[in-house]
Amino acid sequence: STSFSCVKTVESVYTGGQVEWFKDMAFTLARGAVNVVRKGEVISMLKEEEDQIISFTLAGSDTEVTVVTAHKSGLVRIWDCLVVEQPKVIRTFRSIHSGAISVLGLHTLSGSHSGTVLATGGTEGTVKVWDLTSQYFTHNFRTSSTVCSSLTFHPHKLLLYGGFSTGGLFCWDLTNSKLVQSMEAHFSVVTAFSITPCGLKGVSCGRDAVCVVWDLTSHSKVSTVPVFSPVEGMVMMDSLKVVLATGDKLAVWDLNTPAKISEAEMGCDVTSLRGQVDTLHCTTSDHNLLTISQTNLAVTGCTVGNNDEVLDLVLMGESNTHLAVACNSPAIRLYSRDTWNCVLATGHTDTVLCLATCPGDTSIMASGGKDKEVRVWRLEQDRLECLVVGS
Image 1 (cartoon, rainbow, N blue to C red):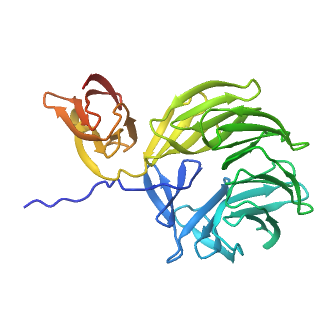
Image 2 (tube, one colour; image 1 turned 90 degrees about the horizontal axis):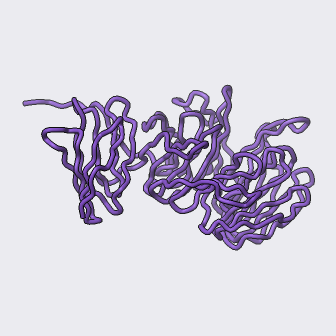
Image 3 (cartoon, rainbow, N blue to C red; image 1 turned 90 degrees about the vertical axis):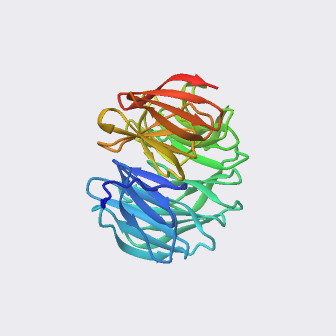
């Protein structure tokens, strides 16, 4: 008899929901916990027994990494994740929201008002602000809206902007706890609000398929730009140049002109978009985590969050260097067995059902799917290149 030992397991690390990135790590919300994912593997987990995490936020530097989690019980926990393999709870307090917390935001103050503040937006239409340095509750803002969908701090002033599911967008002054302006422009969920580095203008976007440019000195509307598709995420590049997640595409828009400069297809609907220095990160509806170059919108990295049901798999290349996997998805997963990096091979328009390699040349593979197509692929430098399509 022969016994086998497991060398590598490719498991589920993301099944939908919120994701935040820090350096080379992704923090994903899955099954009531936050997974810390690096190179496709869960290296640690933020979890409380019998108290599911429903939303979270993080902020970090080289000397400090703080994660704040909101739980189903109404508790808020602050985690120290500087040693990411050993996260520890440093403080717990009750949120005093009458509903669940839908969104959180951390901001570090500078100047005479130093410290770290936390904003929490609830499903009952309220926004609360907490001073985490002095450890007390500072502000409570009420609105006539329902679910809070976005929170943004002004980079230079003590102002907080909150977007809501009814299309409401509000600005509050943290120095006197008063509403500065009700910024009316959207008719659907406000999915993001970004402020230019100079702090003079802001851009809001939503599922009503428009971007609105705001003058943040007077908080008046400058222009409304139709982008012809619901926007699920936005990253401000410079001035009024933004990257928008619309449908299955990422598009770069210059809102000064206004005009679309470029776009790239992601192969599946983009559900969220985040930005780092020269890098974009997005999630897709088939639970993939993509890393994208900000200069040309090319995909530079991919982590498959959830393979779901595996339908077929084959080994490819000389010495079986690669593993091709067909799941209930139109994209074929190609794993390198050295690094276990994954590349998606797109082309099929429906679920890929079967795979087969050529006995004489294992760099050649055929795939068949529900779209009634047979495709022949060649392995070329860690990627699959489609050679022939038959239908």
